[in-house]
Amino acid sequence: MSTNSPPVRLDEITPHHASQRLSEGSAVLVDVREPDEHARERIAGSTLIPLSKFDAARALALSRDGQGIILHCRGGRRSMDAARQAAALAPTGTVVSSMAGGLEAWKQAGLPVRTNAAAPRMSVMRQVQLTIGAGVLAGAALTWFVHPAFIAVPAFFGAGLIFAGATGTCGLAALLERMPWNRVPKCGAECKQGH
Image 1 (cartoon, rainbow, N blue to C red):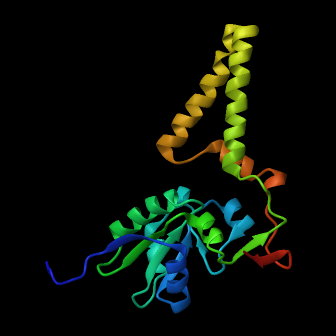
Image 2 (image 1 turned 45 degrees about the vertical axis):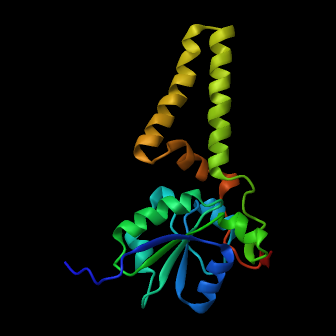
Image 3 (image 1 turned 90 degrees about the vertical axis):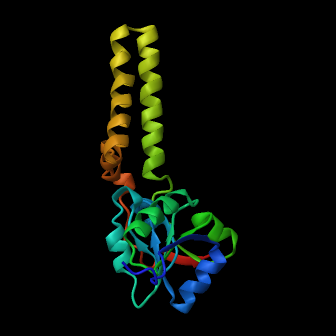
């Protein structure tokens, strides 16, 4: 085993540094948010590989001729998780970066984003949280005021959360993604560049 090969580097970079590397062509940008988030607002040129279905090999395959990989999400946490996964599979010498602060920091730095006004405003994950919260609250109230058997309602939602956490698959999210209000039209003339 050679000790001369440069190790895989995992780092966290600022939006300005990320923008500079992208404009130089020394890195590719991967968005690890969910499809509805990406459809609503994104950095031009980014490739979507959601963390919920993250494939590190696919992300690394986007890199050409020694380019690094920059991963981003909304606030920086999901992209750091994805960066750790990618760094574990990356060839030696590859720079795998997470953009600190994510898309929010990118916008605060005055860097451009593309927006699609026709996309749903509330993310599917927020809809999941609202649905589960309402279901647990309603089930608890029904248990208290109507009949103890309604304890099955919050138990059902709890079991669903355990399953989602254990498998990385959320059935409620998959169902909500198919609802008419979450269908995302293709980004065409309604997409605009902004800060």
